[in-house]
Structures are given as structure tokens and as C-alpha cells.
Image 1 (cartoon, rainbow, N blue to C red):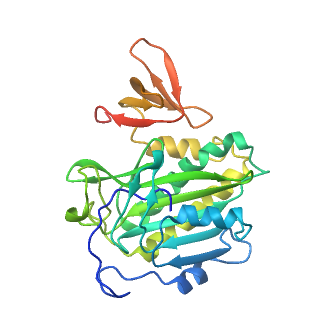
Image 2 (cartoon, rainbow, N blue to C red):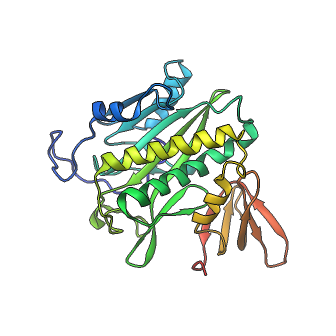
Image 3 (cartoon, one colour):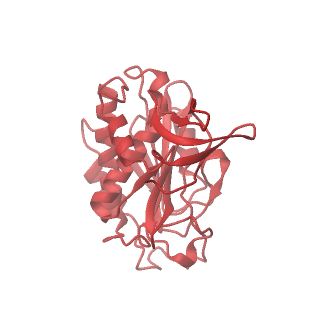
Length: 293
């Protein structure tokens, strides 16, 4: 998949059931629960290990072997990719590594497809809060944050990739049961470390995909309009970036600092600079410089 969250690699004992604290996903049960006539999800496959579920699903789509609503999960990824081609790995069955294929057109203009990763963030955060009992915030543009010992940590991420002219592969990565010793960087986190009431990946995954189906359906029915679909309001309400002083690290080694005050109609982050001007940021890394207050 593309957006593997931060996590560490650890020696993996052999055997599908070698770690009873991390049971495998049941693909048959998941298909029975999620793939239904008239629903968004049309197929669901679980593989033991792959380099990247996003890459695999994109290749299937490019070859004409995947319909809209195809879902691909991996128990372990060896070359998961994040934004800016960053690579992350995590122990087998310690998280959710899932990619889905969507074809928003012609109902949604291509100019509004940039909302898809934000939509996936809202859907995932909503599902995680409901099923794991963990408060989950959104860091623009694609990070999922949890609180561990009073500190914001990245527990997941979202990344979208265009496939040809008419499709998008959305990757969602979520650290579920990673322990502190399995995290390679201080900024990483997991649902377990955030005090989740459950780290059972099955109900969390079902909730995420059902939430994504609902949000995608509403957004598509509204022609991709973030206001009419409720997406802008939901993202704004859950976004930990808004209201904070941030530094935007942009392509070309350019930086902008200012207060994150809004999202514009294209999903870009609007900064109010010290000079009083406003600038919309469409791509780059955002660093939170002070707590939201």
C-alpha cells in the first residue's frame, strides 16, 4: 500500500498463527460482511506480504483487472510508501495496510479529486474513534494523530495516486498494536499506545471501509462539492492543524510560516503570514510549531 504509517520492523516468527496477540484477518468473513450487491466494495483480497498494496492495486487497475471498489490488504508490507516516497515497515499483523480503487468520474470533476485523501482521513478517524475508543485527529494533509502520554503522535496516514485517466488508488495505513519498542522514531504512535479499548483489526477495518463507503457516496452524490457533502465541515472540525502556527516546507526548498486559518474549496491549507497576507498551500510538509489553542 502507499501510505504505510510510521512503525518499526521486528523479527517475525514463522507461522500464520505464531503471534496469538496478532491474529490474521479472515478474508472470507470480511468479504461476506463488506462485499454486497449495490455496495461500493466489489472485491476484497488479503495477501500475507507484499511490497506495496497501492502499487499492486494500481498495476491491476492499469491492466484492466480491477473494478471500482476493489480492496487489497496485506498482513505485512516490505516496501510501503508514504508521501514524498518515504518508506515505512511494520511487524506483520500489527496494523492495517489497505488500498482501494475508486473511479470518481464523471460524477465528480477532476479538479475536486484532491479531496479524496482528506475524505479518507475523515472516514478513518471517525471509524477509529467509534470502534477503538481512541480520539483521532487529522494533521493536514494526510496524517492521523493520536495522543500518547500527552503528546501528539502519528499513528497513520493516507495517500492517493492517480491511475491512468479515470481512477484513483487510496492507501490507508494505521498502526494498531505496535508497542513502544517497535517504533523507530519518537513521533510515531499506535492505537494500543493511545489506550485503545480494542486492537482487534477486524472490526476496525470493517468500520473504516463502511465509513469510507458512506463518505465517498455522499461526496460523489454532491458532485465532489466539499460543502454540500459535509466534508469540509467534518474535516475542519477534526483537523488539529487549524488554529495553530505552522511551518510549511514546500517543494524547491521554500518555507512559509503562519497561522493555519482555513481550508479553501480545493482542500488547500490557507496560512495567514506575519505580514498579514494569506497563502494557500497545496503540497508540502506541515510542522506544528505550537499546540492548538
